[in-house]
Image (cartoon, rainbow, N blue to C red; front, side, top):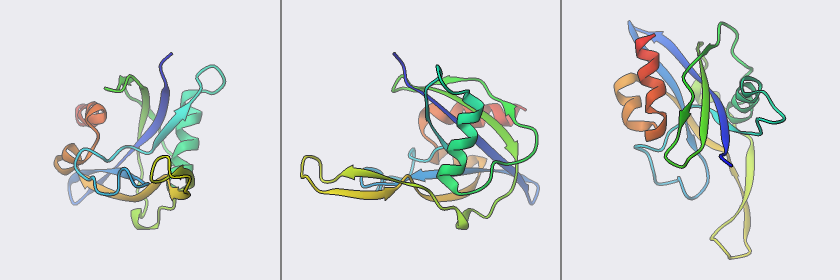
Length: 152
């Protein structure tokens, strides 16, 4: 059975250009990765018990510490990731100060099989990127969300 994830793609107009809000995953696996590592704020949910949009709002709050953006949430095309995960996303125009984002944490055994459990932020940083830069930063499977934003 596939895994499901839902998130929000925030965008803003800055000096006549569109910028998007992306987050970088926390933890030791992602620490040295940049290009192709960023994501929209999103997280997993169980489609049999939770609505995808509600999950997207919840995950946005958990990963950024920001309230759910007000404004019209526009559904984007659901996309299957290279991992097989199914991601639903909504775009909304909103501007937050990325430097104040604060994520929840998760526990992970690191190094693997060491018995040493540590806590890491789910998201270690958030930033606004112009679309050209965002295309380089975002995970390959989420690139279609940026392309769809451009056409809308």
